Length: 255
Image (cartoon, rainbow, N blue to C red):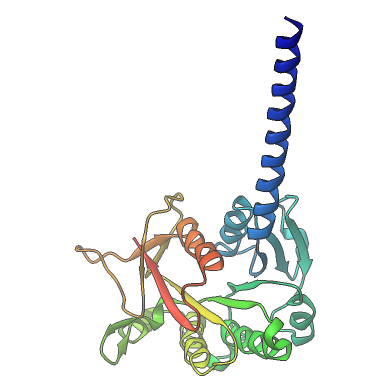
């Protein structure tokens, strides 16, 4: 009986050690697979979903806002910082030691009608300049672009088909600025960029994890619908963080 008890104790100790080593190995693997992600527009409707999705997958997130107090999420892997993608010094100070930068911003400077003054376009140019300065140590860039640049037929993008008379001037300028952002990125060969484009319509639907990935073409359903929830678009964004499938390319996301 004493030998049996000794044997059982030894077996229990071995199993406990094995479990400990396994947990350490899993933790190490998880840490090794985690990416450091800098997210601009972290308080926006898309950016906030990207923050949540990244944290839920174990990534280390730095959420950027001009007013960090607006970032109310708390998590061990989350840091909220003050920053402005329009401020080149601010950008340069925040991109260091990151693996991926996600830009999801909107707007136009003042009342300008010039697409060169669209915040997304300026943001992309500022970020590319900062990443170029870093050389091989630079993180990848994933820019959230608009559906206006999706192709509906040869030589025609979705923005060309919009009844602009019904679209506010500021939104028109922002749409045109997003088209400029894509054109600009396509001229960049020394930075690893990706342009992520949603369907025509964003929804507040739940995360399903099921969607289609396209390219430059506007994809619609059989009844002419083109939509994606912000939660599922965020899934596609973090998929790209993890898989890096569309380097120096645009991809689109639609149900």
